[in-house]
Amino acid sequence: MDFSPNLLKVLSCPVSGGKLIYNKIDNELISEKAGLAYPVVDGIPILLSDKARKITITNNREQISGEELEKSKKSQTYRVA
Image (cartoon, rainbow, N blue to C red; front, side):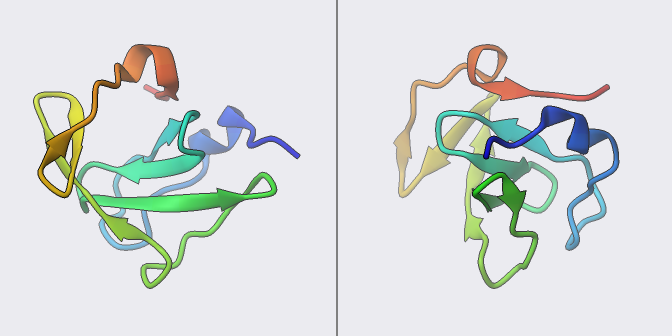
């Protein structure tokens, strides 16, 4: 089962209350405000802070363990305005 980007209209980060961005490549929901990435398992977002991984967002790119990933949000994520 795939994650439906339409869910982004009603979901928010449980930690910050901010918007979530779907990262299709890693199958995660990103909360830039909280600096967390929540996994999506079988199309179901797992919005538990203890299951999320910490991330750092810099210059519209995700940085993990000090290594900047070459990922464009436009090509790999869905953002709901």
